[in-house]
Amino acid sequence: MRQAVLNLEESKIREVANAGIGRDDVLAFWFGESDEITPDFIRQAAIDSLRRGETFYSHNLGLPELRQAVAAYMSALHGPVDFGRIAITSGGVNALMIAVQALVDAGDEVVAVTPVWPNLTAQPAIMGARVKCVPLTPQDGEWTLDLPVLLAAITPATKVLIVNAPNNPTGWTLTRQEQQTLLDHCRKTGTWILADEVYERLYFAGDTENDCAPSFLDIALPDDRLVVVHSFSKSFLMTGWRLGWLVMPPAMTHHVGKLIEFNTSCASVFTQRAGIVALERTADVTPRVVAHLKTCRDTLIPLLAALPGVQVAAPQGGMYAFFRLARFDDSLGTAKRLVVEAGLGVAPGDAFAPEARGWLRWCFASQDPRRLVRGVERLSHWLGAQAKA
Image (cartoon, rainbow, N blue to C red; front, side):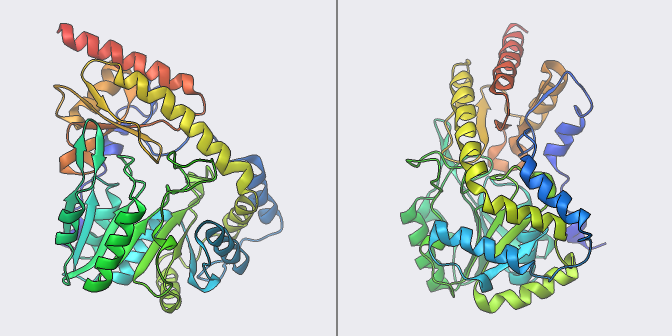
């Protein structure tokens, strides 16, 4: 096998989850998904499609109706986004991998802002790229970007900049000015920007529930070297459906269709029908999801912050509390202990970057916020027992 594949690390999140999956006594907050099922009208659209016998291939780039719906949705948020810039993929993960396959050659330099969901640094490594990580800096529980350091890391030798904002796991979000500075710099160096913006609607710093985080699409030209990744998973409660999309320069779209052919051929038609209905009824789903997640965030963060030795800040976006426990620097070992000794499942910071060792990620996308309260109670009792040991 290729050495790049042999060198891949297994998911540390899965490693922790495997210790507790199947145990009814564990409160699990380790995976990045809500425990609320997909709304019925979205599920019904897929059922209706199957009953119509729509079990065949679609166009590589997706159903024209869905591409049009995505273009209209993105245009409403960010200004005109043409249908010809859209490709439908089999999930956000697939969208990211397709983008990396399109842009990265073996030996290329890729710069990534970390901590970040491990797929974003693993995917270019699979392609044989040299991945250079520029870490965010934590201060009082909040992670911030040292923009001059990132700019210095991006040179004409840098093929792609990978940035995820709002960020998984930290909740850090780029400002509009930071985006503009990065875009201007990457135009000068000829660097592509691969922007993972799947959490853009899960944004808590705006004035209304319909706000979204700053996007590169707000300021970029259609022909800029920019590829933006989106997914139905988070904002529409559709994690298991595996449906996402890419926004790219129009000259790139045809070639991405070829890559989709050689990866998955196409997303399933009945899943795409569900996506169409989800977009048509965005107002019935996403604002409620965002409002509920804000309630969950505002329930969990103060409770965590009140525990002795816990360092945490309220995230501006996403669905995660990223926190540190004083004296527990081995986050993987600590997460495993919490499963076994406290019946509490969280993700280890080690999974996201070496600089996040000692941190833990708690997904607060819980249909019942009382689960979050019970989880903090278990953590509090465990910390108390450790203090006495």
